[in-house]
Image (cartoon, rainbow, N blue to C red; front, side, top):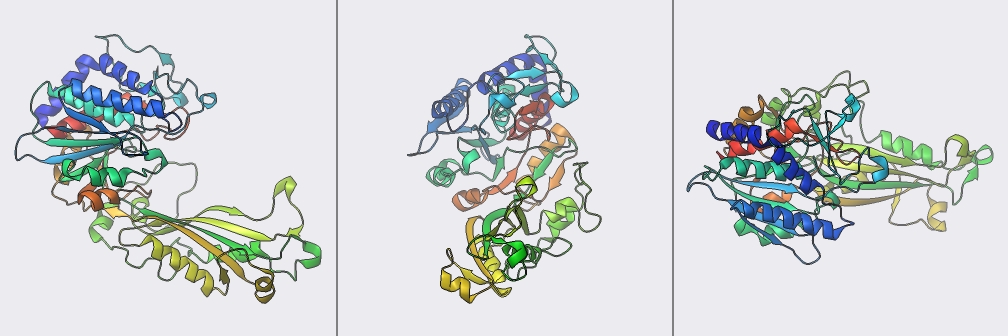
Length: 474
């Protein structure tokens, strides 16, 4: 591993300008769903880049799906076998909101927020500053990971690695990976691995590298509370008509207690209690200054990510500000996202919320209440839910993860071992289709503007990606 890492660093020190220019060539290809030709060209370009390096690579396109790229880097017989997943598609990019065109890769001397100035890409033989930033859509999320694997292959310089790596790169992640399960099932015999590395997301906000062993699952719920058939004058009827805004406010407040713990009976049924993950979470530093006061007491940030959560993502009832009217609104709506931990069933979680609403005395309906229902009940609510997918967590002590942690430590220093992201990613597909344990290996800088304008990748993080994947190959 040390020899491989040393070769990687020598290679990028000697060929840094060329690596950056090849990366820029890939970033110049549009990668949004609205441009299917751009997506197809991304897949072809990535496939050809690996073929040019003597790596087994091919494209495959299922009916109605964006093209996927799969391949294999052959290691020594009996060596470890890893899978690497990344996506080449990106979020839409409106040039009006960017400081430079999103598909004209731009090199800057630092972060824009720190006054980073536009600079030319270096010529062969010139030095490369790790604090430089490459601005382009898909630079950090997620084509940087693909380019890093190409750099790691280049650093091998024809040597056979210790580990075998199979890889799958898809072009639909930014709209939910609808065909990923089918791709994994179709290609299962070619994608067998001891551990799958999902190379997406940022390193820890402190700049330390991190290995993430899980994600939460997700479901969504909307609760609509009904009042009078139409908005009514609040002076005349405010003390007489049921006010759905008041009713919904109390309902929403009942979902959690003062420490933000869920108070819905049955919601956390099946949630997996993992003392090892809790111990690991307590070693993870909390995020830095995010512009608001952190909780004054209770568990730290990482430990909270191990718990189920009900979040209010939106509320609507009447109007406010200059548009406000003195009325009892006809209805009020709360939109919730349910963040689920391993062991929870998304459909059961939705049912528990529905049962909770009924337990508060609401008459729960499936559609718009009719006149008889309105006259027969003062508390009427409609609860609709969409089950997403379950949470997944790989044990930090998983045997195949030890080499990953060792590679991260060698390439980037002491890593943060995060038991779970608080966000939701459909990693369960790797478990269900391949029977493989997934681990997230982020590369991008935390301030990469993922999904926003002026997305960027810090060059030092790009170099770290090459280093860690080279060390893992060995």
